Image 1 (cartoon, helix red, strand yellow):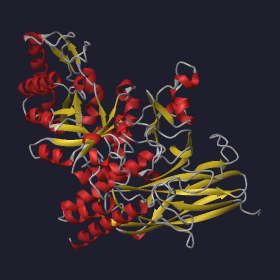
Image 2 (cartoon, rainbow, N blue to C red):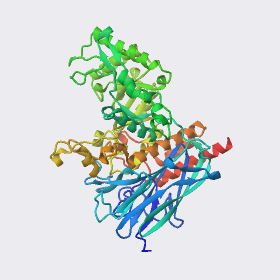
Image 3 (cartoon, rainbow, N blue to C red):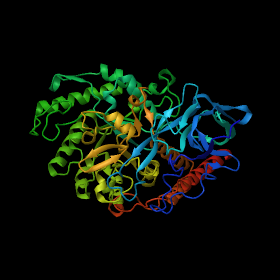
Image 4 (cartoon, rainbow, N blue to C red):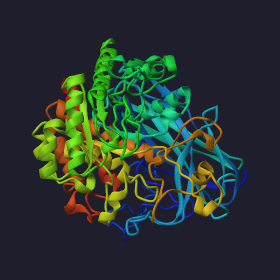
Length: 609
């Protein structure tokens, strides 16, 4: 046999490997001295080259992930990676759909995301979108890729591996599971051992980290395509915050009528949880669990333009008796409709007057109060949450808080004592916006899911939510925009975002991968959503949150907070941290150590009981 022309190593789920150099993109101690560095190709928290073994830890109802890096010694015609199953106690197997392989697709960062010139990992090729395995479950490729067009400088290819540990104890009893990954080519074959320790507890089916990721595109999809996006979100433990679903309205005043036919046809499966069952091809966490909340369609006219729901008004804000009667009738029929089904009653209802989003004037505050009173009269106080978004001052909130149940505050305006004060007055708080600031101007971002920032800004959402005992909101997860200035063509959004990471421009701000955690299936002609590594990192943080939640439930909340404080070393966000880029430890292996400590503690509690 010819000399083998490739070598293999492995790493965890919170770093990415440069396809040219073979080093972590996060190996940048010039940016943060705690970033991972050294001989991690030989040994890291997931990999031991001397034993050729990957070591994992996980709970039932959890995804554990890692990466195989195949390095080419010289150009190889074809490489194939297969991984069938893990065998554990009494011969129990974890395999089939519970093990999924993906081939990383590389996007090119040409320029740093605006406002992150110091913390951006810089220009280069980034593994990002994850293309699913072939029908037989294997992943095949060439190095250099003949489709990604990095060119002859490409020296390695990332293969991402997800393992879902079933929730039922009989399907995944605690203990050690072992399996083998086969990497083969015409010049030889390599075997990598995988060892998974399954702890004796399971992550909850429900999402306990309150929040959602706002989305404006799902409702424009065909319902069966939209279903796939909801299911991917559900598997990754986040909820799409879609505004604008509404029944059809006819009539006005007391004669107003709502037709729920199309609304129910589209959304009822999310309200009763059937969208997340075998009936619709679903498997994984949250099986049969309904979405946590829905945003009701109530809205007023938007900044001088008509278009409120359920009744339109002109540019002058002069609601009359007929206008209020329309709202009262819409409220009555809405509550009646949702209360008919006991399961639907469990879905939280949120009203957000989008026309008043981030409005900072006495006129806007008066309108917020007016609509809160109107809705409480029609729907009943306590039946829904009245939500406002914005970095409101303490004096503004002193006026608003009696009428607000949910305040979504931008991270730039997150003054912790202020937030705690109004939380003590009964206002639930969520944060939205960048996790890390270099400057105040970064507050223009609704999130910082940017491709060229490290993966901890995605994983850190769940951790910061636990640290602050808050919910979260992010802006978009499949945002793709035209780049007309570069392309001189009317619309080519998909192909441009697929090859170049830059997907968003607003004035002088240009961002890579902004609000883009899921690519659309048009990019590979599958019609299905395509996850990114950044989405996987976000899921890792949401799963970490459930560890902390479980610790609190078994009386170990102080231990959970101690682990948290060892990673996030200050209160993130707010004026004091506008230019503080060191709100946490930057080595993901330290985060992994904290998670494993939490898992071992929960396992020991389970053994006692």
